[in-house]
Image 1 (tube, rainbow, N blue to C red):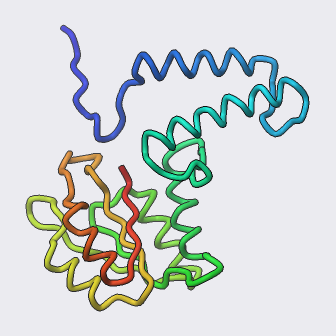
Image 2 (image 1 turned 90 degrees about the vertical axis):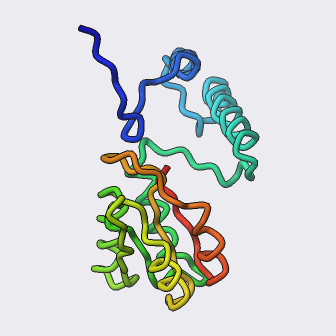
Length: 182
């Protein structure tokens, strides 16, 4: 019997092109080249990293200096949320999370609240597992500014896709930032 994997919201198999690119990069760094080193191997390693940064920048239409590589999702989530709460100029005062948020988002937000850096508010979801849009809009309108709204794109357990695009304009209109775990 052949098994069929359908949980692509939690994780997905690595694509052939991505696997090939990773193997090529790893082979290039087999000598232990450090992209921060000034020797030839280090400069070659840095060139590979910077090429990847440019490619992602082109794909996402963003400034390449804003692209940061991490070892995984939890590290990236922690860095993003902690960074917003500890911004030098105008850090976020309040973080909204949904009741269905991934534990990496929920635990980071709660740790920031425990440290006294932010208030955390939980946005309810409907019986269908979708963020309650009316409750969210009301929460954003009365939030401490600036705030951060964390909305998972597709729930990793149920597969329900959240109305992120529908909420984005309300978040921005009320002085908030949007973090999407996608």
